[in-house]
Length: 231
Image 1 (cartoon, one colour):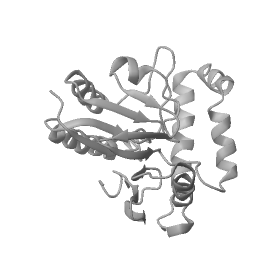
Image 2 (cartoon, one colour):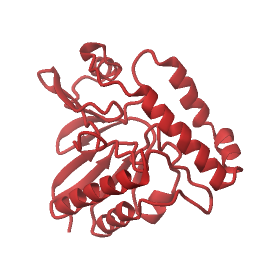
Image 3 (cartoon, one colour):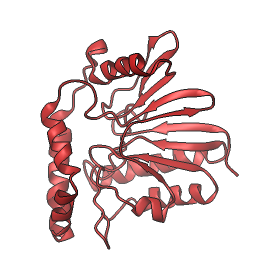
């Protein structure tokens, strides 16, 4: 029987930086999920759950069985699970939906929860700037590019993708919060102008946990991560 509380978490980056630390982090995440089973109505996983993920037609990356098993049990018990693809796991197709029962979202979502309006997104590629990344994201999201990658043997394809995934994360980590100049904050303010009242903007991606007012009735929340902050 599902509870009544809605939870949000992001940026587990399972698989990074090595198997040992990832396994320990996975155990912490599973312990947290078990602790909320009794009162959770919905769990939103806001992207980069995996440091790399690609679903071949008959294969997925090895590992993460503790997390996947725990999520499957929660779904079987009536807890709603919602997964937003991040820049590291954007190649999640239908495996998590079919095997576990997750809802998959690939774009930002404006929705109502408990009588409040929420704008939900992983948070990559929104707002002004970052044109190089936006171009690369469009390439990676292209069905032809995905089809071509799927032609690679998993040992080779997943291996090179994991290497570049780690390089990408390490080269783009920035622990500075830029306040009103943050692309996520700029985008949130633009959404307020376009859509009127929105109570909560919830993102991942930046790995910096923040909860700040945008105006009297709107809050900007970044969930941080589970690599450094366990937030």
